[in-house]
Image (cartoon, protein in one colour):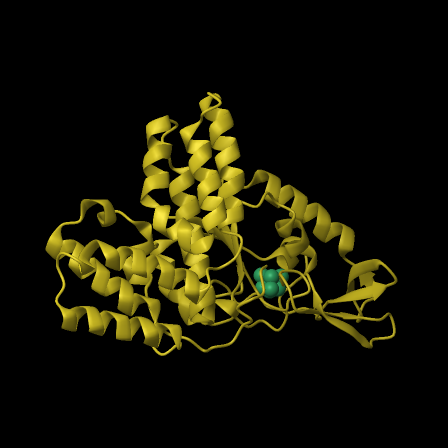
Length: 319
Ligand code: SF4
C-alpha cells in the first residue's frame, strides 16, 4: 500500500539543480522507505544541462514566461509540452512533492520579474507546477520546505494515505461502507458538514450504480481533505472518543489528566499524538471495537510520525 508520489529530482535524489547541487530534506529522506517516489527534473528533461544558467519567470501584462536571461531563450513552450506529455503518461499517483520557489517546480511563492529584471511578485507558480495544479483534485500536493512544518506535514501525510486507501478499495459497495466507517472521526475533524454528505452518498438512497456512487464520493472526499482540520475540530473528535471510556472505565484522576492534556493541546503546548496515544491505549485496554480501526488515531504509518517542526510555513495556506 505504498503511495506513489512524483518528486522534484533535486530533492534528495540527484544533483541536478542549476548550480549542480542537491537539496537535502530530512523529511523526504525519512519518507523514502515508505513511498514509491517518481523523481523528475523538468529543466533537465527539456534539455537544459547541469550546471546551467538559472532561469526565471518573466511577466509582461498577463503573460508569464519561463525565460533564460543569459541566453535570451524562452523555454515556456518546451516546458508546457514536457509537462503535458509527462503527466499524461504517468501511472496513477497519489501526490506530488515539489521544490519550493523554483520557476519550474514551485507550487507557490515563486518570484516573477519584469522584462527589465525587477521583481514583480513572490507569489507565482512555476511553469511545470501550473500543470500539476490543474490536475483533478484527488492528489496530495506539497512543497518540500512546507513539509518541515509539523501540522502541514501531518495534513499532507493524512491526505496522501487516505487517498491511497480510497484508490486501493475493492470496487464493492461493502468496501466503501467500511472505508467511510473507518474514516468517520477523521472526516469529522476535517469537515463535519461534508462527512454527512459523504454518509448520504454511501447510503445511496437513490439506488445509483456503484461507479456513480464512487464518483460522487470521490468529489466529496476531495472537498473533505481540501483544508486542514482546526485544533477545535480535533478536540471535538477527541471528546467524542473520550466519551466511550469516561463513564464506564475511567476514574476521576484519569479523566482529569486527559482533560488537562486536552487543554494543553488547545494551547499548542502538546502535539495531537499525545492525546491519540492515550485513546489508543484505552482502546487496547477496554476493547472498544468501533474505535479500533478509526484512521483518526493513526492516519498514516507510525514510522512516519515525528514531532520535528521548524514552525515555518503558513498553515492556513492551501496549495
Ligand atoms: S526544482 Fe525542479 S527543475 Fe529545478 S532542479 Fe529541481 S527538479 Fe529540476
